[in-house]
Length: 275
Image (cartoon, rainbow, N blue to C red; front, side, top):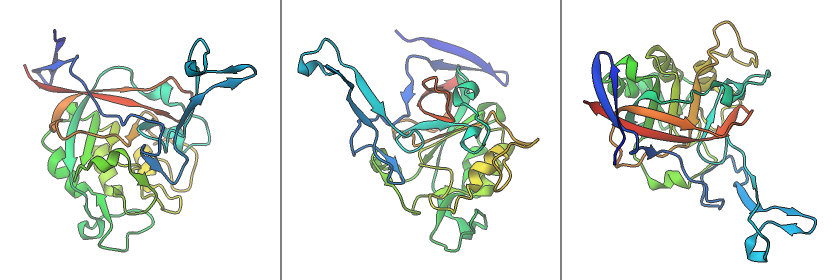
């Protein structure tokens, strides 16, 4: 049985199968095969230990009780909010929508930032540094209407399985230019989901130009201003299988109710087509 929902957007009826969602998260195996950032220790899952108790049924106790330790920003798929930058605590579970968000899924090939004439901070000084530019995003984003851009899912090409276990520690990873982030804001995007470990260059002297541009946080400031958009979110380290086609749909971004700036997440994508 399929649970088909019909939704009217821009005066056009679309249908989606709410039992046919595609999980875009990377499962944590609690091993050194999980994706990791900045040489952070891998997430761990071990039996809870207390006086007279080890929570492992293999040792003859009545149930399994595990202690899990992880760093959401660095261990696998996660969703973050403006509290990532602000001194004042802001919590992702207060900000992230709980329902289905209209979205567009696109595939983008990173290009030379210098050759595209775009910028970041610190300045890009080599033609070999690749990024997601406004130029390469605009060519595919224009095919969707603003109503379908509340969330934008970006699959970078080539789409290698290595993404699911990569140890990200060098500056060879593509990142967003300031112009690309400005384009997404002008296009009505409120939630970015991407298979990169960060919107920014991994080693950027703490500038975080893409993050700051996304939330409208002044350079070198840790306080919101009158232009700060605290309702936007970022989901990083997703994986979009090749079997999932570019196009329109809905995304449900599921998180545990952490009072934290970021939490592990499980984005589920439901493709949509005209009814």
